[in-house]
Image 1: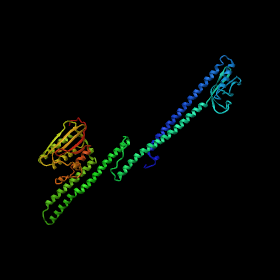
Image 2: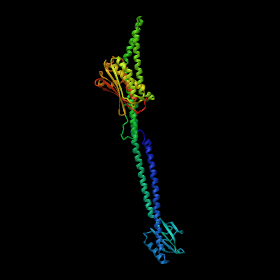
Image 3: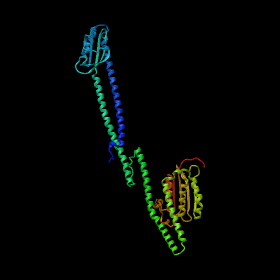
Image 4: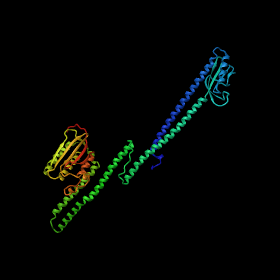
Length: 458
């Protein structure tokens, strides 16, 4: 249902405004056409009157008055009603021949009414007058036919103008109603979102117009908003479940330490354990805040060109010995050349790869081989961090990206359960996609970055 009156809607007013401009243009064109047609008809009538006057005047070439008198009488008799009028006067003004009595006094073209010509009825005549020898000859043609044609043209333009006005109004109402309904659908969607229905989306027509383009952008923003809200809800749930245990354990350790102190027993071990628990909880909250910062896009101000091959090589240098100390092997292969550049934050990218490598080192058994690679495919840079460890069930591969989510087999190991969540947040910030795939055996994390062309040597 429309939210407001059609006549008060902006689309209708705009459409009606353009319709009014079109009507004014049509009216101006019609008036110009009418004036041009009227002038052309008058010019044709004047030419006809002059030609007839010249033909009649030519009968007096030999100065024979009877010839011109007979010609004037013949023309007057043959005229259809009062469509054409003729008169021949002598020098004293006495009518010698013709069918009207009072010619105009001036020579040349003039307008004479039927009343002035002494004729019955109404109407005007276009009269050509001049001297033929010593006599005065006047020839007039009725303007009735010209006026009739002009009247028909004027009525036709009036009907056309009425049709144009009605059409413009109808099209304005149709277009305004259509646009208004689409705007109402946007308003309804935003009302649903403001009332908590985050799954609501603006319907698209699919014709690719500007409203569809804006609606698509709004839908993308709503999807992002829904994901963030869902992430916040999930974080709240995960914090309630996963941090409750360490907090309870911390409380129990502190209570035990307090009881020992009251009994005079040493409690340094319990205090150290409490400090470790507090440090672990603090790390978890710091990681959550860091993810929130990254998802808010606060670090985009520091974006610059980053050599992703250099980042991957740095990871190999940093963690090769760490993996070897943990009885694992780490190999790194990065595409050579100066075309492995992305727009991003080098520090965050290093942290993303570090999290992925640390995750593999922490959760894989001794003897596991971990491989980090970077290759260019088309316009993308594909980075992979894989291992030949026990892997992750396919049903859990999306869940492990959730904050504080940990597999059952990983709950006995250290960690916050935020490594992969932080990696995905960093990837999203850089416009990259990140997925888990089967490494057969093991699992590999695949991140696809949009590359930029760069020929700089650094």
